Length: 310
Image (cartoon, rainbow, N blue to C red):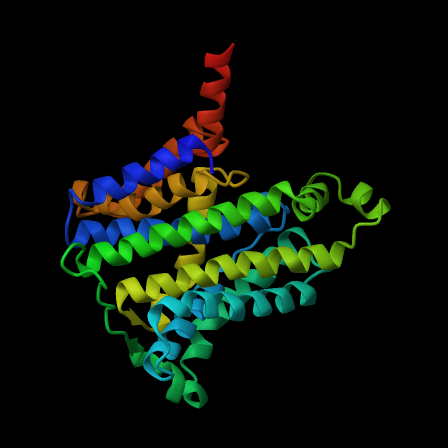
């Protein structure tokens, strides 16, 4: 991690102690969404595959964690890794199935996945595990050092730690051989095929790793919220993750944090400004952001750094 990234993490942890209750919950959600957006960036920004189905893997990760904690008595700290493994396998299988689809056809396939997931979770055959429409209530984990850190801040620290670890993983993936192959598929697919890159295999890998990140985010989100239900994972979740990716910069690892801040805080701010039409105000702010930052927040920061360096 760069010195700038390390400084941002230190500031994020330090500032959390100025807040309490709901605001710490919001900070935890920002860390969760940053992980989910990072997963989208890997498959869309660096591979060029349009995905509108991240909400499905977010839900799968959340339910994996909830079932593991409530019915299998698995400790909460182990569930993100379990959820990541389940989503890695599921994402890879889905990526293999849609390997020949591109563009709008791939987008529609992933959209269908996000639409179907809440309905599948409500099936009577799965009611024993998923709780049906009623969902599953999760007990909030206790801080192991309650005398120094309360439960809310402890969960926030866990979310930040996981986000930092996955940020490092994503950075190494993109800089490695796999990352170079994925970027080649995005920028020059015909040339990539010509030099021997297995398109289907690398696309499936991208979907698998992306789903793993999103599933881990879903598991952490379920633990933070303390509750999961099918209605919590509508298509809006996928749209939020997509909006966060575009606002932050879909081809930037660091931009995931900017996007997470936007989708978590801007709706709340819009609701406080206008009770009558908060989503209209949200839409206006989103348009303004796109006009001011056509390459996302990360692109804006990079352009400013380039101007300063000249």
